[in-house]
Image (cartoon, rainbow, N blue to C red; front, side):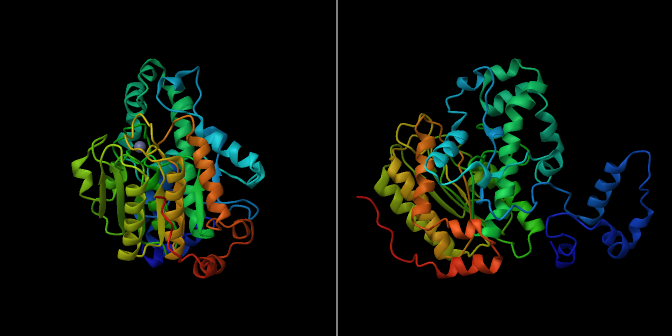
Length: 407
Ligand SMILES: [Zn+2]
């Protein structure tokens, strides 16, 4: 986005339409605002003519009393036991929050409530053709890998399956802005890294990582480079396809080379590719993660890191095929947050894959560990987080010591 466009983006993400029409684009006065086709068409016409971001509810200011932890009970998929037909815990997100509340880290009024991404939000990345395809239940059944969805009327599919995923997607977009504002943010859901603008798959119906980055590029001054660190057990072919030819985005991906999706074309977008063998264990994994995260951030200093923290690397995961211990996952997240802090880069974490019964506890333990180490900072999160304070926090916290790897 050029600087001249940025000035139209008000602080809360809304636009001053009057100012826009008055000064910047004199030719627009010919657009008939009282046209019988309604206001939406005119607004979309303006968007097309000006390349202006649309109105969104996802970039509203968040009360300073909230932590930059984004969640909604609407994340969890529950529908007559249907969710049990997929080999995952479709309620893991709520369980993470419950553990964090039990440990007194957060309370309900300290959590940022995720909002559902609207169609217009989704169109920032997705094609209308793709969104229309989701109106077919068999398409959603294929993407979510829940075959019985095929037999449901689409209004139920929309409400019970896609709406939770759209809410998680809205959460990732919101958390992107929060990360830049506060220095860090965690969306307790999201991380749908197999979905690209025109294709879903692997339980990923919306490209939340791509959306979050594109929202930041379009709407937040000073954010023009992003690094994706994708440590889910699977290759993140969705964002890779979306950013294939976009030099503003640096992608590092560590995954089991033998499992889904094996997307050779998408691999071309990976700047730092670490392919793992079956059964890779903690020591080798953590050494590689630490070395390559540092290498990635040294190679290109981004304005934001998007960390796809999938937990399907856990030993025993039926899909991931790796053998990382719970302690290894906690350590991995610590390595990534520490590296982001050392390089003074805001970080957004999404939880992505990993749906064993013990997964939610491990994610909660990891967040608690980050907090106990000062890598996610309570005072900053709950105080008036001005960008200068974020900069100060990122600059002054003494986190440069070498990380101890387990043996
Ligand atoms: Zn995965």
